[in-house]
Length: 133
Image 1 (tube, rainbow, N blue to C red):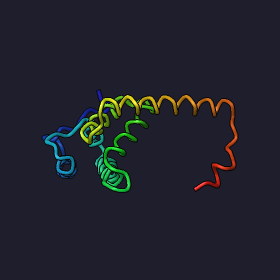
Image 2 (image 1 turned 60 degrees about the vertical axis):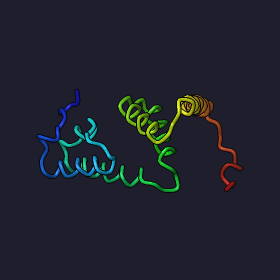
Image 3 (image 1 turned 90 degrees about the horizontal axis):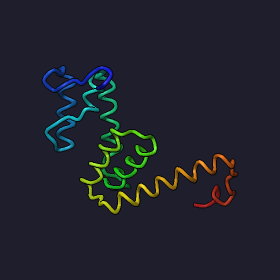
């Protein structure tokens, strides 16, 4: 259970309802997920986080699938079960296949392994990595 509980739409203040309405409109859905309901106890944090998510996840140089897969990779590394579920669903909605998911998890696992090896061995960065564009 969320530390402060969840703010359901029916119980939300007008300010929170407006944000919920925007979330549902932008995401083309008829429900609010628990993450937003938990944040709704602090409307300023809810609004700031939603505005940032909208900006970062909007179409840009990276397509929506790539952004969802990056979010999923970071969430996996950070072991956030909620975010893994949310962004797996988002990535699937954007076109991620089972094969893409499996390959992504292999890359995440390998990156985590080699990152730890580099840290443990305290490997110095190659000069060529710093001068290549």
